[in-house]
Amino acid sequence: MAAKPKILVVGSSNTDLVVFCDRLPKPGETVLGGEFKMFGGGKGANQAVAAARAGGQVTFLGAFGADAFGSAARDRLGKEGISLDYFHCVQNAPSGVALILVDGVTRENLIAVAKSANEAVDSAMVSAAREAFTRADVVVSQLEIRDGAIEAIARLCQELNRRFVLNPAPTRALPKQVYESLYSIVVNEHEALGLSAEPSIEKSVDWFLRQGCEIVVVTLGAEGVLFSTGGAITHIAAPVVKPVDTTGAGDCFVGWFSTGVAEGLNIEEAVRRSCQAASLAVTRPGAQDGMPYREEIVPG
Image 1 (spheres, rainbow, N blue to C red):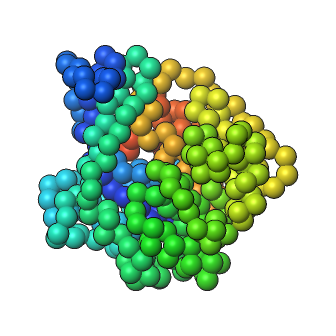
Image 2: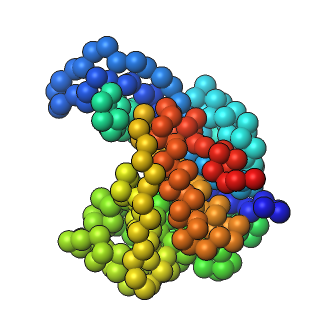
């Protein structure tokens, strides 16, 4: 890889407070004795770290509170070599925190995210970062920030002819203008079915294409990935691994995929490499901590 591809990630930053339980509690139930750990998280920050470790020159646009969680989040991203010129401190809200329970057997998780400084990422903050958009090869975002911010990203990407990769999680309805602005949408199977209201993954892929998405990528966990550029749907199998913590696996995929696209890989190559990276990430604890480095995935 010659010059590093430039990735702009717009999104959330959280601190993940994780309890590894013998099993996930049922509603109203308390489960005792789990191991507690604290990790860097937030879908935006996770994807930024993944893209940086994949070899991208990453700028992160987001917000944090004037508290210890925010200072630690800034330090974590800075140590990854991520540009923080657009990572803003806001005084009237706490930094993002996510509460995560991980099943000790299946390694599946439950996640609740608190209201926080992430909500300060709005259309005005996005518009003020126009210069960062002009420099980016690929722009990446998710839905842990305001609708107005997502719509502003879509407008800027269309105006500046920038490739916009959206991971619409947590899912909610999006205006057609956002879909039409997308180079690629990356969804898991539940998000695909929920957003499209279609009865099958294949029909949901067709629905996203009809909305204007250029490339549709559906991650299937241990079953791998499906993608389509408008023709036939291609399936890429995932490596067989023993998962330790699935938190952040989708974010790992998005960060690696965006970097692959930005450095000029074809879509199948970008998907295949991203699937390998995400499969390695689930064998390690922590969202950001578990992100693999480029040399672990890309030979030479």
